[in-house]
Image (cartoon, rainbow, N blue to C red):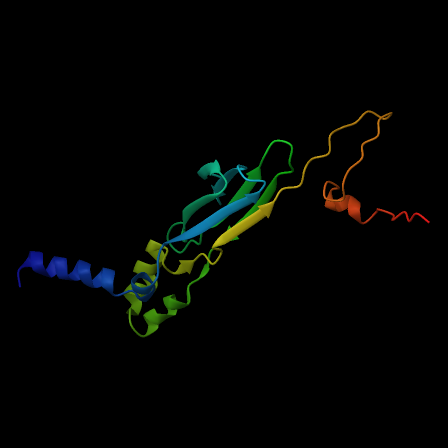
Amino acid sequence: MSKLNTLLFSILLIYLSSCASIVSKTRYPVSLNSTPNNATVTITDKKGREVYSGQTPANIYLKSGSGYFGKAQYLIKFTKEGYQAKTVPITATLNGWYFGNIVFGGLIGFLIVDPATGAMYRIDTMQINETLGQTVAQADENSLKIMSIDEVPEIWKSKLIEIKSE
């Protein structure tokens, strides 16, 4: 074999000798939905960098790794004027196929390929559905506002007293 063939074979062997990289992905689909629709959604990674900005509903792909032996972590923020913002964290978890390197991939897959590509991690969250609560408008002290029970913020509901008519 020539030196070039040996080099190409070695590179191919490295890429094919990692278990999680063969049977898994490094980017995972996540569906983002909100009630009400058309909320602004912003995703930042663990370093605070914005990786996505758009409107709901949205279908995106998130990387499972964030560098050598680093698992991805994201904050997904939903905002819409007149509604309370919500933030949802997503953290990648260890991929079970990564341990297949003990049998199939060897040290190259266990210590180099899967940690470098991010295939040693996976994102299990496939869908996020968030309901944004309406914000309560500031009223002056002499005004009265009547709300339906759906408009009352969750933190106030425990303090409500039922009034029964006879």
